[in-house]
Every structure is written in C-alpha cells, then in structure tokens.
Amino acid sequence: MRRDKPNPWAEILAALAITVLTVGGNLVLIWSQLPPQEKDNLRLSWRQTKQSWSRRLTVRAARAGRAGMGEELAGRDPAGFYGVAATLARWSRKLEES
Image (cartoon, one colour):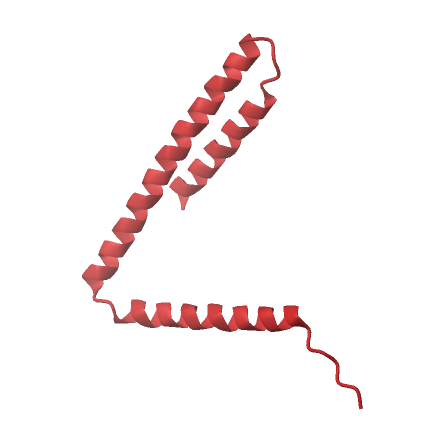
C-alpha cells in the first residue's frame, strides 16, 4: 500500500493557526486579569502611539505633496509624488478615526 506524503503547506498552515489561537487566547486571559487602571494606561499608550504615527504620516504626506509641486513646476510628471501624498494622508486619517 502506498502512503501519500502530507502536504507541507497544510502542516505549516495548521501550525500557524494553532499558534495564532494560542497567542490570542493568552492575550485575552492576560487582559481579563489586568486591573482597570492598567487597562486604562494601555489604552492611553495605544492612543498616543496612534497619534504619533498619524502625525508622522501627515508630515510625510505634506513633504511628498511639496515634492510633487516642485516636479510640476519643473515640468515633470508629479503623479507619483501626489499618489504617495494621497495614500499617506488617507492612512493618517484612518489612524485618527480609529
């Protein structure tokens, strides 16, 4: 009787799923055991991190927009810079909204 080899990708995917579920479960348990003030501190820290990233993205979007304007004034195609500026501004807004 011939035995088929197990699919290595299926094994990797199963191991990854088990790892994600284990880590997720542990995080839920840890979160449920934290005192309320620690939860508030973590939420505040997360908000500050999001605001910091949002500011960084906004600054980079403005720089890309200015670079696009410089390219436009020089007679070159500014589409790349404007696209980057729009994408960064969109990500910044999403961070602020969440």
